[in-house]
Length: 400
Image 1 (spheres, one colour):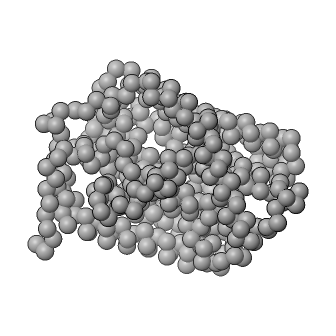
Image 2 (cartoon, rainbow, N blue to C red):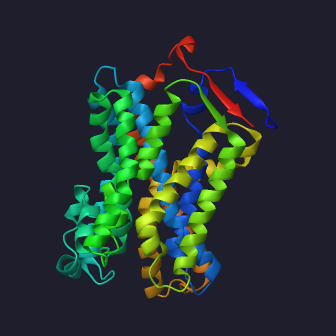
């Protein structure tokens, strides 16, 4: 064999447990694609615009990471006291405060300002924003077949999908054996495209059903969960070079096929028939390969650039940036209306300023608002903080 086999003698938990800096960097890079998608104007550069249009692939990477991390937490704490209360309390303290703060802000903006086409139009042609308060905004969007007219609500669909997973999956982990759990996740990977095909045949004109509903877009969460289970199931020989090739090929194919299918289209790339039926599965598979590759390369010279402080910080505040950037967009529009800004949307400096305002809001939010809740979260004991004996852990062998 031409490749050199390297056996990792340390416990495999070193690879997949604890804080993985490379995944924070992956969040940061994905977030940059989302910001480009929402802020970059097509007239500035078609190439950059198309890169931003691939931000939906970044969302699949977020799903894979969530599936991997949450499944790992649940598996590691399954047999511990207060399994449910501890998990749900810690999740709530991390997710709910900022989420509901931004919902309140958007209610005020939409109700008491002239933003967009107004609150009454939202109620008449989409529905009540109360759907988002119960993490069901994605369901309402699928029912209506269009995004809410107020931009601040639209990006929340992915948080709805993840929260529905966070709510339901702990039940499966608690009451199913690991092998049955693995079968459940494999079934989810297989059935997701089946659900998309069925809903497409039922109503091909609805461009959102396949994208925003959990049963139709759960491959990433399931694949992330499968990675977490496999790491906890004994020795795993991973050919890093082959994995890197597969990652490049699958994600490259996803990007090229998506761009080609919509280069001259007005609809976003994620809305093409190809992506709605097949593309989400291929994208999720590529993102799963990428997450696994980064775990295998954790702490290596190949990922040194991913551990630089700016990327790490952006990854740390990424949740805040995702929630605050629509408000930054609103602020920029209001400043333009009042002629405070000299730059139009088609000016690159407008893009830079919009991104800058997003980052500034998220940084302040992290220090002033989110950190106090995280300190409360840290007071709730986590069973994962107790390292298991080294002798009880499986070994990992990587090749290449």
